[in-house]
Amino acid sequence: MHKVINKMFRKIDIALAFVVAVLMVGGFGGVAYVLASSTSTFTQTINPGTLAVDIVDGSYVSVSSPAMTMNATTFSFNSQTTTGTFGTATEQLYISNPDAADNGWSVAIAALSTTALWDSATATSFDFNDASSTVDGPDADSFAGQMTIDPSGATLATGQCLVCAVTNVTLGSSASYDEGSIDSITLVTGAQASDDIGDWTIRGISISQTIPAEQPAASDYSIDQILTITAG
Image (cartoon, rainbow, N blue to C red; front, side, top):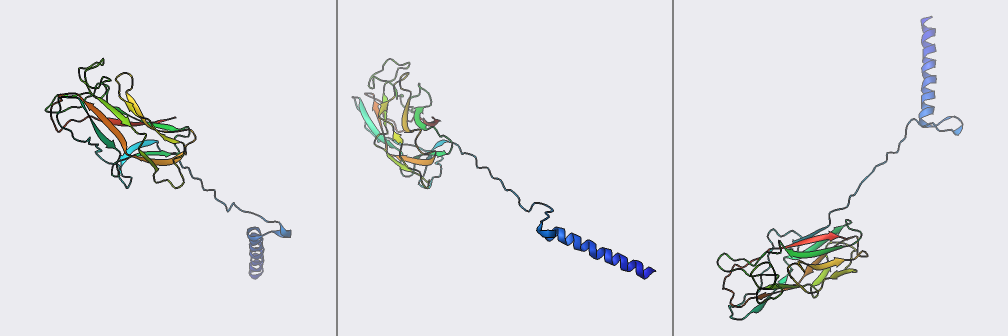
């Protein structure tokens, strides 16, 4: 009797194994039976970067303390003009639009405040935005002098991007600071039709500064200027 029962269980095990095998690998009459999905959907998000302007070296590394030195001049009893160049191979302006501004952008430069001056630790200061240039004008202070920035003849080039172009990116025109009237100067503009993904460099922006007559000699005159970028 015991042997008969064991044979019955063995037959049941064989039949059950057959059914399970059919369900896993195929089916009866060509009909497939799926126990679970074998496909997993992977997802990925790439967010836009940040629209930015910076001063970088030739390897696109930010310069920690960028500076532009005007050409030296000699004391004069008359007013005079000195010049300089903003944007060099080792300190170039760098604009990056990593799909952040699809309607264009613009870069401008300005002093930290409209009352800023060319300051020295040992000499009298002079102005950067007095429209009279050589004598004190109608602005709020009692200093003369005016700075002119001309980006129109600078060199504009693409940066690290693979397919972007300078098409629809335009350098600004020459302008002079005038307190209360021209407090910032546009250096470059990317039109709405410019590349939404791209980066650009600028070298060789011309700077000139009128210096009042009898401005005292000193080697440490300085004034801070700040770059800003604005999406269109």
